[in-house]
Length: 158
Image (cartoon, rainbow, N blue to C red; front, side, top):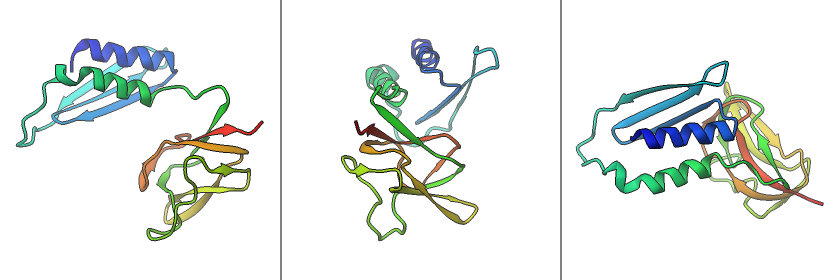
């Protein structure tokens, strides 16, 4: 990873008020945290390469920066994020063979169950707590989430 890419990530973190960023690519891992005064603290470590040839970093710089920018985009003014109220595992359906609670484009209200967060073997239903239309699902199914992790973006009903 080039210093230009790291500076771009730090700039995106500052503009979007992120306190931590972590990226792992084949053969490389970087973690950037901002200290109490907002200064970046960068740590990186090489990862033992696999037998596959590693892609040239310069060949994918634009795609990489685009994906980082998309990941830290602030929500539009007319949208609200549904965030995780706890640490746990995010599930989009009540069981592996059951239909998902919601889809992009679906209307929700304050009482609509949007997902489950499993914490310590307890399945916790998470409600939308907002009326509107789901515009984006931000977390993949069966992935761990932290407290306050954005899960969904909903365009608020007018």
